[in-house]
Amino acid sequence: MLLKPLADAMASKAADNGWAGVVVDGAVRDVAALDSLPIGVRALGTDPRRGLVRGPGDLNVPVTP
Figure 1 (tube, rainbow, N blue to C red):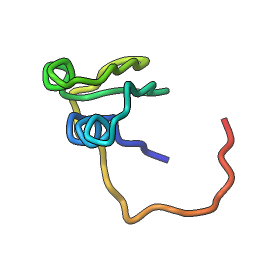
Figure 2: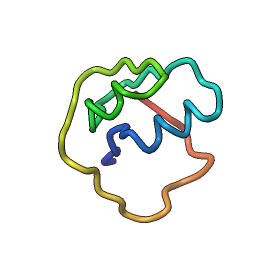
Figure 3: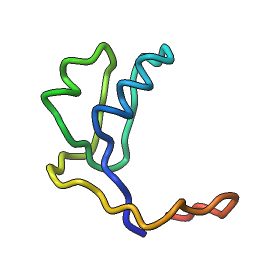
Figure 4: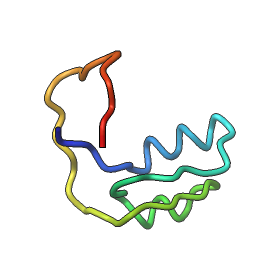
């Protein structure tokens, strides 16, 4: 499965919803834009590449490490 890194658009929506912060078990993009938002972001790393979208995704499936 290929996951998309957290970018500023998603973090901005979280800030608009009153979230104090986001912890990401993965990568983030747009670090400069994330730094300007009123929300804390902690991640394992950064990735400047945009993620691939391969359809709408799956619902109600088990998550395993």
